[in-house]
Image: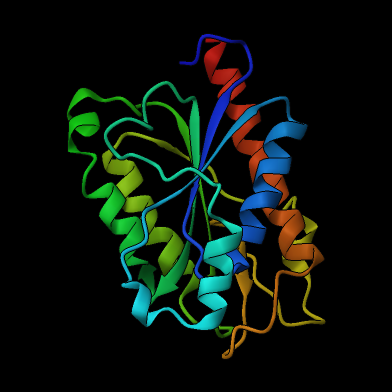
Length: 209
């Protein structure tokens, strides 16, 4: 646990075109709204610079001041974690997988056991693997002993059917469109905000037990 009364929640994400970045910022707002301390970090980029297109390079410049998480240090001292990853064929992206594959020491020590965790994602298409991505991330989190937190149907945004949008009971999501030109709408951002609040609230309750 962190030493202060406010829960310290790690927002750990990867964003190449800015969609997950926007969702992560909304998660951070939710954490702060619930009285938490958001530790806002990205995972390391693996794609060689020469293969990044202009949009990816633009986002890289915008995120240059966001700290890169160290898988051997930054899981320590947190009270909860919220992970954001774009989908890659129904799974987490390689950059996020690379981070978790280096966390064996904390797994062995049980560093994260009993702490709450949530996941959010984004896809290019309406049925592009949002739920499988979140669930496959959750498998890794279960191995670390984390307590899974989703987005229940008290989030009325999940019931929206008049527009194409993300959102699942497993966690928030957004639809970027095949060319990546659709950014998170109000409902998607609200779901992300609410996940931040919910994980923080649960972390606070667990700190008091």
